[in-house]
Image 1: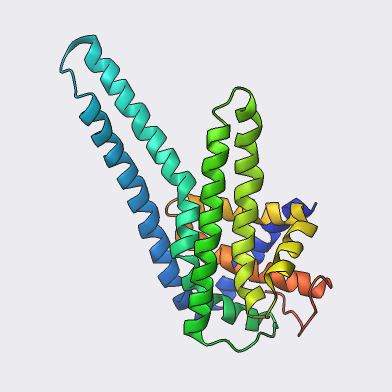
Image 2 (image 1 turned 135 degrees about the horizontal axis):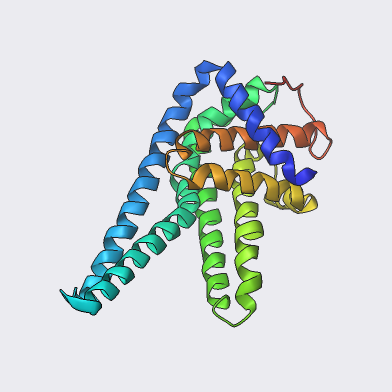
Length: 251
């Protein structure tokens, strides 16, 4: 099943990283950035959630109202933490993925890919620009779907769509964008590549969500997700969906 390709690529990515220790230093900077973003996001969500409740409804002090206030505070903390976990992949895309360009480029060479020579700073700027656009469209669409989900019955469709289709597709696009850009693939072809095999892209994105959304796990999850994106592009090359170049070396 194509939707399971993402799992296989993640395994290959982990094996490649383990068998090529020279890649580890290039994975550390984005990994640390991801951890900081995740922890800070959850901490800010919980702290500011508490502040908002205390501002509009201070602790009554005693009695049943105090226990109601305490229950409300606990619910806000849990909801805020879950919201932060949902937003974390978008923050990782914006702040962490551009820092993975040197890692992705070296992985592509190991896999036998041939890229256009792009200066490091130019590649970083291009990746950051794409990350901003992807994050903007992704979060904007998520907010719109959230508002639609407030309508009766619509939430039954919108919620699963955002979780299982919308976010995974955007994540997959961003992970593939770097190696595709270094091959001078135009935006129209990048989108077509994504939409011609939606199950493959959704599966790739779902695995990336799991790797990026969970604090601590995403310390290694981001590099693995990025390497998986490079492997995906090489798979597409070898299957004829892109012009095949070089020969792949199985990790």
